[in-house]
Length: 130
Image (tube, rainbow, N blue to C red; front, side, top):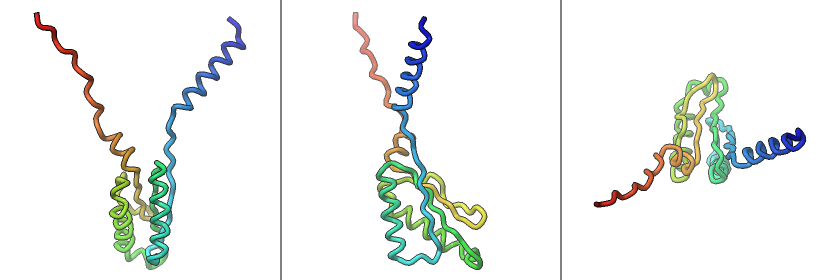
């Protein structure tokens, strides 16, 4: 067997395999607890466009200093974002405090529904009557 031909075909197979993969990106949006309404709407529209493109979104609320006392404000902010994005997304990870950051992950609704839905049953062959 010709080694050059073998090498060419193996590279070609590898590229075909990579072409069929659907890489899911995770985009991150950082917020602060004292965010203004207009800034929230701007970030909301950016997150919405990320989800519509099929990317997951990691929402991060960054607390500084005395803001750590008011973690409920950050949690309400994340829950509001999830509620407004409910038609196009699902919450993959509920708000969780990690150090000084509260993190929540949203996934596009179509991808999450496809992953959770069981595959349709195969059509059954009809039994012949004798």
